[in-house]
Length: 356
Ligand code: COI
Image 1 (cartoon, rainbow, N blue to C red):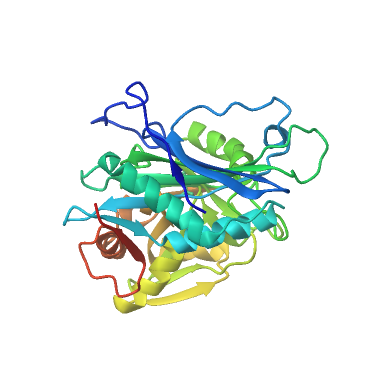
Image 2: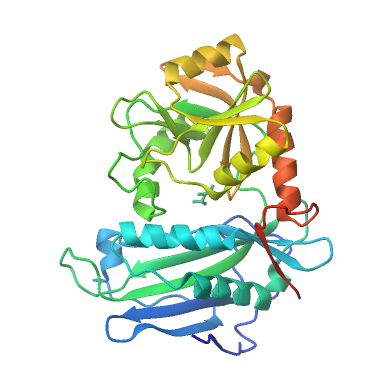
């Protein structure tokens, strides 16, 4: 399918801002494509960034049949652009679509839509340290119908915007409250899909954690309430004795993160052992206290690597690495961002270069 590119009017062309905030600043254009059972996917278009006008009965507003993705475009030292693992994001987008009874997209066309939008909006890619263009593909159910059933029509769209640090703290280690009261996801549920409901269901726990002075929540498994699953909106990794990186194995309720997968691939080539295991919370805290666990960090597209400074659990605080970012977290962050930004060779074929 050829993407129709609409010309922007002068009013639709705002200048690229010098200041921006994660998720609040968006470029001038967006991609849209519609689905209905007769036509399949139709009318792929890059046009002005604009509000969507939807009937108040539209099913996404009531039953949350929606999915999204997050990936980034980076300014390379040679002035060209890198997309990082857009194919993995497209594949996960389609897995999420299947889980949510939505229509899958053609992965090649999805990646092409991202590449075309990023190329048109390349001036919006910031070049400051650690900055990039965040790409947010989404799909929503658009039937104006209150019956609880899979929608017959969908809107697939992509927006982009310049971003810096996701957290106000930047890369400073954050406090994490281990949640005893709330669970993020359960096996058989939607935890492995990138769908809004997982995130809205998490808000009450993170709001309560913030009231107590923590930045994030550590999620335990919903069946036993004892195995570590995720931290905030990220996967979590533990460094044992300064050399072995351990992360919870995917159980169906954990989101299979692209950054998680990238670090598990990259770390052995940097000389670290990696392993995916069941991590029991009491043992983990004992290992932090004894110094066996030397570093803990969250990993995701938005932050890349986000160190955990301390855990709060049942009224006690346990510090990790004296609340400082550790050398292995820093090493992994540097090695991965060097590939993402095109400062280092990419032996894994993860980057898609766009020449501008
Ligand atoms: C990530 O990239 O780590 C996320 O999932 C955060 C996003 C929902 C803003």
